[in-house]
Image 1 (cartoon, rainbow, N blue to C red):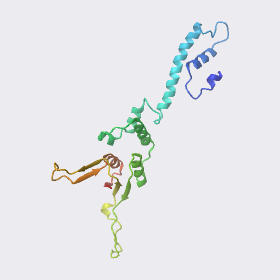
Image 2: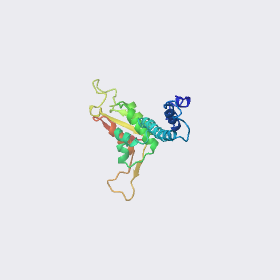
Image 3: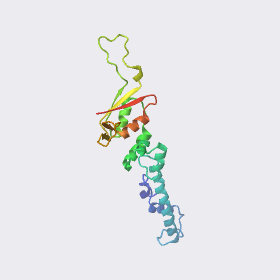
Image 4: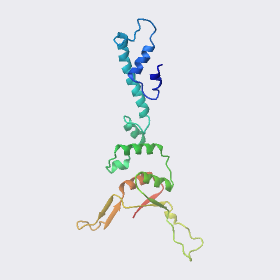
Length: 209
């Protein structure tokens, strides 16, 4: 194999490389010429172009097999990973390609979890800073009985996410109804994602600052 071909093992071979390889397979003799105008050379030129095309597509398949570099098969990767995120779809949100690619990789590599650190990391990946308080602590005083529980058993599966006011904020106007609140606020995307991935036996509350 020529040095030109040997040095290109890490990328697709060009048509000229394949033509050189095909010509090197010919037997020796005056009938097997490498003259550019010879019929055998023109035949090898056509074959080499097709071999180079197939080689390029094979290398592209390697790229498509990696979710970090996929392009043509991105829609199939999303389908396998259950993306786009149902919360984004439900809220009518739009994501750019880099965001979609990052969401795909994150969905495939994450191992899940039930710790506060896990949910804080999920929120951080979405661009939100949160704090989590688990359960409901009762306030003990100097006159509290010794056997007084540290937590109300009815609230041990409740956890509260504290976060700045998000994308939803409304105030009562003169056109409001009597039953309308004076003000309302929230973060629809964060709430949707957190409620979707929280443990099924827990109750989730949001506190906005």
